[in-house]
Length: 282
Ligand code: NAD
Image 1 (spheres, rainbow, N blue to C red):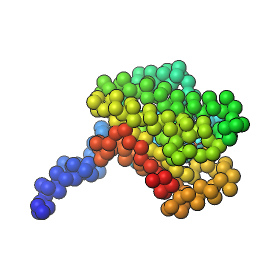
Image 2 (cartoon, rainbow, N blue to C red):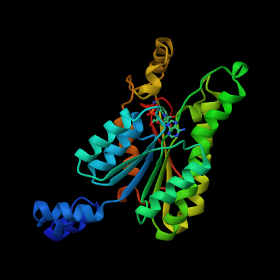
Image 3 (tube, rainbow, N blue to C red):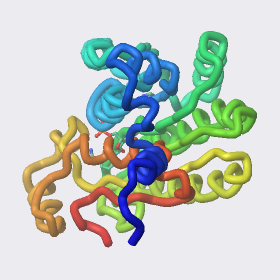
Image 4 (cartoon, rainbow, N blue to C red):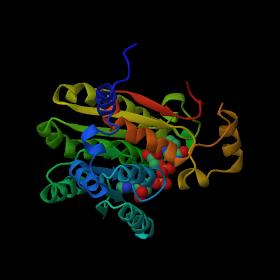
C-alpha cells in the first residue's frame, strides 16, 4: 500500500469532494464565499412539509439555494420551511401551484428561468393518496392520483430538461414508493403512479445520460409524515410487521438519499431506484 503522504491525502480528499487543500487554508469567511460560488439551485416540489421539507433542508445544509413548490390550502407550512431554510444562510423562495397542470408548471419554470440562470437539481416529490379498493375506486380518485403523482413528474422534468441539457449537467430525483414495486391493497392508483415513476426515471435517464444529466429515483417505505399519520392503527401495525429494521422511517432518511444522489459521490449513478424502506422490500 502506498504511504499516506500530504500530497496523497490532498488528492484523495479532493477526489471525495471533502475539502480541497486550497480551501483548507482559507479563512472561515473565505470558505463561506467559496461555498456561495459553488451553491446550486435546487427545485423541490411538495417542499412545504414532510419528506420534501427535509429534502430542501438537506440541500440547504450543503449551502444550495432552494425553491420549494407546494399546493397546500394555506402558506403556514411553506412559511415555516422558508424560515428554516433562510436560517441556514441560503436563498429560498416558495411558489404555490398545482404541479399536475402542464400550463402552471410551464409558466412557473419560465418565471424561475427569467430570474435564475439555471436549475441544477429537480426533486419531483409532490404526491397524494386517494385510497380505495379498486371495486369502489372512482374515476376521479384514479385520475387525480395519476395526474398529481405521475403527470407532475413529466410536467416538471419536461420544463427543466432543455436547460439542463444545454448546461450539460443536472440531477433529477423522483420520489417513488415501495408500493410501486410490491403493490398495496387499496392503492391501485397510487402504486400505479409510483411504478410509472420508476419506468419514467429509467427511460429519461437513458435519454439524457449522454448529455451529462442524471435521473434517479428514491423509493421510500413507511415514513413518518402527515401522509401516513392519517392511516388507521391496524394499517400502521401491519406495515410495521413487514419492516425488518422494526421501525418507521424518518423523512430525513429519504432526504439523505435524495441529496446524496445529487452529489459528485454519485456521479456514476443514473437510472437507479434507491430503496429507503428498512428492508421492507429487498
Ligand atoms: P405530505 O403530505 O407530508 O406532503 C406532500 C407535499 O406535496 C406538500 O408539500 C403538498 O403541498 C405537495 N403537493 C400535493 N399535491 C400537490 C400538487 N397538486 N401540486 C403541488 N404540490 C402538491 O407527503 P409526504 O409523506 O412528505 O410525501 C412526499 C412524497 O413521498 C410523495 O410523493 C409520497 O407519495 C412519497 N412517499 C411517501 C411515503 C410516506 O410513508 N410518507 C412513502 C413512500 C413515498
